Amino acid sequence: MESLTAIIVGVLVAASVYLMLAPSFLRFLFGLILLSNAANLVIFASGRMTEGAPALVPEGASAPTGVVGNALPQALVLTAIVIGFGLLAFTLALAFEAYRRLRTLETEEMREAEPVEGGEETRA
Image (cartoon, helix red, strand yellow):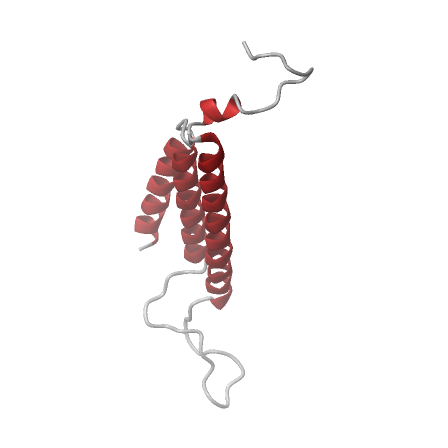
């Protein structure tokens, strides 16, 4: 199961790097979200993937019995999902405002909207 997860993480990272190198802000955004999901899978897999073994403590015991899943990576992934959703919402709002003002999401065309040092000169 861990080897399959490692392959999936590798594919997600490769796809995210490919998308982030594209000259479109929207593709960069999709690549960023894929990279976030790949990092979540790495954190989740680091806590051992055990089937049918929740981290529950039986009544009267002070620790779980047997092999159980680690609850810390699960809590970290849950927090990372919420942070990733906030990042997605912010960057979508940023992309919407950039498109509304500049009428493009291509990064090279957005660069021409930057102010030039020294006043009214045009870019070469």
